[in-house]
Image 1 (cartoon, rainbow, N blue to C red):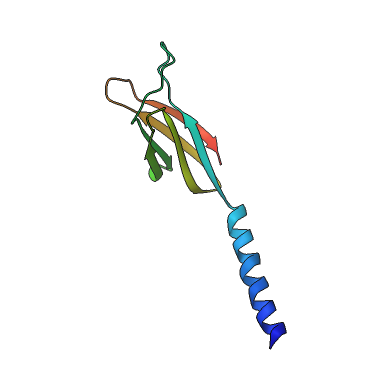
Image 2 (spheres, rainbow, N blue to C red):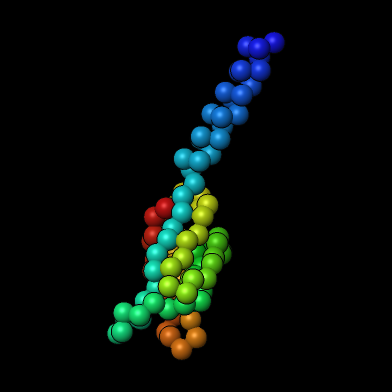
Amino acid sequence: MIKKLLFAILCVLYGTMMYAQSQGSIQGKITDAETKEPIPFANIVIESGGKQVGGTSTDFDGKYRISPIPAGRYDLKASSVGFKPIMVTGVII
């Protein structure tokens, strides 16, 4: 009985570790190119094949983090009122 329980726990832990290795995250800081000031509340979207996979907004200091993201290649879009939208293609997670 104890061996079966231990085996079941190990299987669950192993599956969790395998899942964790195929996931990633992306983080960064959005700043004004001229003044280098952070841009708060900008919208960040990641896409794969034209479909949105995730997204968030920057905090007051212009920082953002999106997770979990399946491993792969993505396009990252940043936009904010009063600024030209920016796209970075081919971001590898």
